[in-house]
Length: 152
Image (cartoon, rainbow, N blue to C red; front, side, top):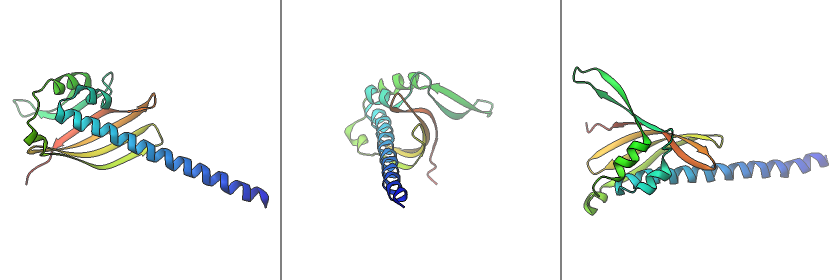
């Protein structure tokens, strides 16, 4: 009987610590996504570097050739961070028309996660699916695919 009574607090503590770790990871994943969004719209290379795995990560998207054939293009994040951070700053009026919505975060354990986000940048709304990986205690976006939302 006393074994059961002693086991219950240990079990509750374990569940509590696990829930706390999941909440901490969710907050860190959210911060990573926010670094991506604000780095992108503010043209801030430091925030973009915090968000993306520049060593191995890449963005993929579909494009059509002149002949109409659809291809997947792969651009390394190292190239994107340089490109995005060197763009001309957006005017304050445009920045006010930018929003981020995190539609969902699905974490598996404490090492990998996926997120679906909606980014409105002035007149264009991007829907991104992000793959994130936690290494050396830091969440980084390792893969990104996106589409531009139709304005039907």
